[in-house]
Amino acid sequence: MDGQRVLVTGGAGFIGSNLANDLAERNDVVAIDDLYLGTPDNLDEGVDFREASVLDDDLPTDVDCVFHLAALSSREMLEQDPREGARVNIEGFVNVVEQARKSGCETVVYASTSSAYGSQREPCPEDMPLEASTGYDASMLGRERYAEYYGDFHGLSLAGMRFFSVYQGYGGNEGHKGTYANTVSQFASDVAEGRAPVLWGDGTQTRDFTHIDDIVRGIVLAAESRLDGVFNLGTGESHSFNETVELINEELGTDVDPEYEPVPLENYVHHTCADPSKMHEATGWDPEIGFEEGVGRVCAPYVE
Image 1: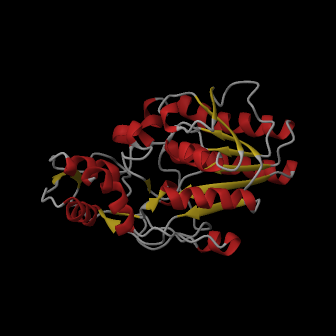
Image 2 (image 1 turned 120 degrees about the vertical axis):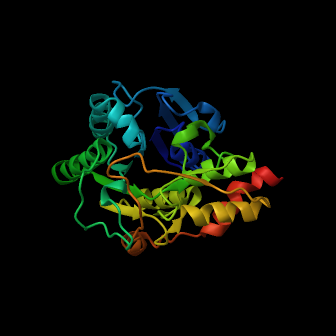
């Protein structure tokens, strides 16, 4: 993507700021964020940041492409206030897409979720049955249904990205998220500071950890290809929390053992794994950063 005018919602957040900064090297980028969790400190000077909510009128949607990443992005946030979660995640999506449509923008790439797959050891294709086990799942699947409507009825191109366990580390743009950050980032911070990382259960749960650089590249490819439908962005490989802590110790030259606590949540997802073949077939996208390299990048700021 080059020489385009684009809007990134949730642009001061983790994924949004990485995307905005990448695009700003070659494009005119406007980023909006209500700063509920994001921070403009994540953004480079080349990004035009504006504090705004996706529920506002008169959003800057006079663009070639909208990247809609704004969301209340965890089950905890939705359980604290289900109605506000639905407003932001569903009404906010409709508000942004509707304003974009009226402004003449026909391309939208938006954040959906992989959590609706539930606990799965085998790679999950996009067409497998889904279940909204949490309010967060329900709200993001609601986006997918509205995207179908806007594609079928209004002829827009809308690509929903089902992200798998995105990480970068506190040395990147994840530091502001605190306990909402990916477990790789939290564990690395704990181990580097001599604290025992807390693992739920016995630490054998697995995640398809996907580095932010691969995620950003996939989002941009989805826009350039004007994809329609939903697409997994994940590596197709899973790693346990125990393995993650071991790798972090190896990178940092430490020997910090984790602590184990009972799983406190119902419907806890024990295993995730993407089938990324649909995205590969549509765009040629493949993950480029292996897990060991990614963990090394997360740990690098602690050993420099």
